[in-house]
Image: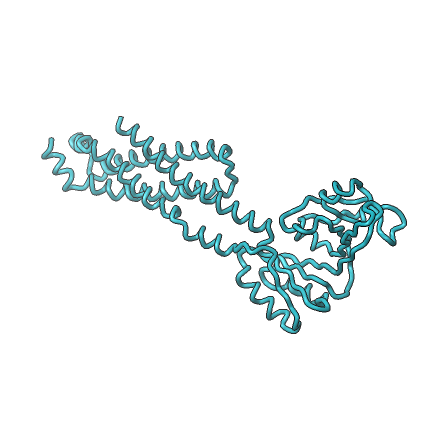
Amino acid sequence: MVSTYSKILLSSILFGVCLTESLAARTYRTEIEVAISSGAGIVVARADGGIDNELCKRTENISGVETVGMLYKKESLPSNKAPGTLLTVSKVDGNFMLIVFEKHFDPATKYTVTEELIKEIGETKIKFPGDREPQALNRVTSTPISEGMNRWVFQEYRSTSDVAECWIKISPAMQTKVIPLLSSFFHEIESLSLEKVSDTDIESIEKRWSQRQSQYYWVAAGVLTGLIASLCIFIRRHEFFLYMTLGFRRHESTIVAVIEIFLIQLFALILAFSILSAVSPLMGFVFYDFAIGVTNILQTFYLGISCSLILCFIITSGKQLKNMKRDT
């Protein structure tokens, strides 16, 4: 009976530790995803008179820079579908679209617009001055980064001319290192302006994750599971003296105790892992969250086994066996 309760208690401890860490991992992952989707890590370089095309491209060679997109120019033009209303036609390269919308240009269409603009003009074709006939529109879904661009019409443009804006996407882990480098990289441009698309600080999110208290819960849980498993052996200590009277040597009795402890904790490990596997889909955990939980289960299990072994050797030591003999 004691052994059964102990297994349930150990499983609860293991599951509690992994669930706490999995929830923390999900919160961290969600915060990072929201920060990245809102433009954290994207820096826009501007300058009076534009920025040299080649200089903008070379920023891609900086360690930590993922993508460099270019906005060449913006023009306010009237369209046949929105009389009296000027739409902003932005000439950009493919990388700009990847940064803002995570989409490529459709080679079959000349213009790309957001779904909001299509709803506003009520058409899927549009004609600007210089077009011989109305052009089919490729639609994209707005993103937090494209806020303020819903009335923009994007046109793929390739040129060696200066760019109005140089969009630089930096990997989250390298933001604090790369952003200061950009000022020195563009040091020859006097009127340089560097602006972050989002003020969200990924570094603070990373810091909160690395300093979370729950990452140490498995240590306390491991020691506790070791004590509980060893207590199961201690309660039955007279059985080990009985083994001695039947001809078992001390190290053989110890091996029996070790095997029992291992089986108790192994049962708890399997039960906790099974519960986590069942709960993960219900709580929206992805593989990252699940892996964090499994890691903590294993850490707790190994530490629990280690603590149990130490106490097991103490319990089955010669002095303890003498006490057992005296008690009987």
